[in-house]
Image (tube, rainbow, N blue to C red; front, side, top):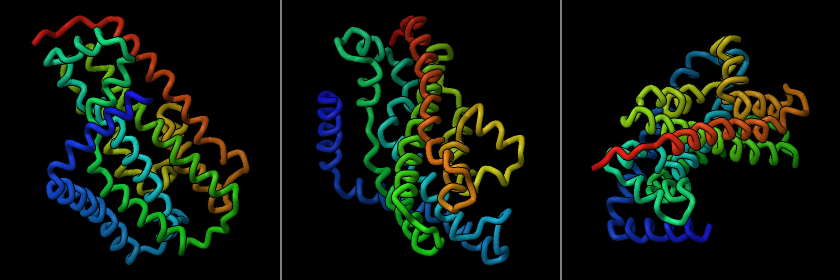
Length: 257
């Protein structure tokens, strides 16, 4: 972690050389997310609820999902741009250094500009928190923390899958964005509204429901007590992602430069 701290400080120092650019990028990220908020706002002016979920409850749901994705994108952006490291032969240098390759790839790029998106998510969550009539207690606060941890791990795992596939394809596979950017967009509503089949997929294949739908039911007093711990169970999704990465490293042959 000491090495990652040095990467963090290095990227932050470089970023502060262009403060205006950083500020404008953060504002742009904030406004992009704000457009999604406006779409939800106008839709709920016409419909009072979506499958029993009110506007305020959906805001609470989307605020948490957006924050999970933004945190993962901030720290795992190196995986999202990993295909360029493969094509340019930069991963060869990573392998000869006496440090973990995942840590080096993570440190290759840290997106501080995602602060704008995180602030938007926080604003939506705080508003949903204040008007959703959730009876907050210690368990529900812990549930939100578990959702943030589990969601960050799940999205980071998907970024890791994208990077691992680059070992076999050289070029990045854009369809993986369905599971990252697509999940962020569709995650603004509880997963259950997309049908039972999709809920099953998002429970047992890619565990979005474990970091969004079931904990949300717990917060709204509609779910079972063990739903509190499902976001931690979702962290197990990272294991097959990691194994795929190690398989890719094992079979890696230099792409040259």
